[in-house]
Length: 242
Ligand SMILES: NC(=O)c1ccc[n+]([C@@H]2O[C@H](COP(=O)([O-])OP(=O)(O)OC[C@H]3O[C@@H](n4cnc5c(N)ncnc54)[C@H](OP(=O)(O)O)[C@@H]3O)[C@@H](O)[C@H]2O)c1
Image (cartoon, rainbow, N blue to C red; front, top):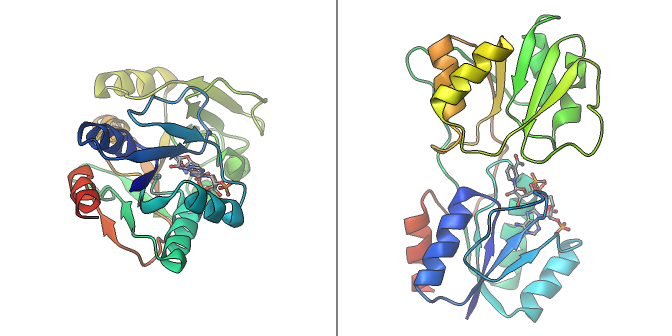
């Protein structure tokens, strides 16, 4: 029995390690968007499957008997497709989805559904720190006229897509003290974040609270109606029951 682990998150890394230690036959799959991804303790294939037909072919050729989807809470397309294809092919499917962040006392959060809506809250000339990654950067083009700082893991391959922007290279984790120092140094007026959830990238929210910096929180996309757990432990137990 081979299990396919759809990876790209910390939960995927942890589950890969757990499956390895439990000696469960499993393959991890990465989209290949990060140039030097952290290694997983499982045999790993990298890159998209081409399309839905390619994914179906892969599931058959690799003899996949169960799929754990530990992709990112904002990777809605791959999750919707994977859940539907598995249902149609009769392959057991489970998503690991960590809980969303909730504001606590002292937070100044504004919630939006789409990146383009951030501009309605921000005044021209203000400094905006995007913790949202490079994939959605173009969606913030209506912030031209602000100073926009986009943090990403890999060095940029192309110029900033609109005027007034700059890249900042950094690979998580980012300790709270470093985030506070960074926001002070850059004189950040606004922090824009996807509601990814999880402890690892929460430090920027703690830093924003400490500095009383307002946060624009992008709500999560809808996820399919499919089996779901919140933790790696529950996902491991599900695999062991297969
Ligand atoms: N969106 C984010 O904010 C974010 C943040 C951190 C990490 N990630 C990770 O980066 C990857 C891409 O994110 P996205 O938002 O672009 O996803 P997406 O829009 O849901 O998926 C785009 C395409 O990427 C390929 N893909 C995605 N995950 C894959 C995986 N684990 N293995 C093989 N192919 C995969 C598929 O290509 P084919 O159609 O060719 O099969 C899919 O159609 C995901 O694995 C996600 O976990 C995303």
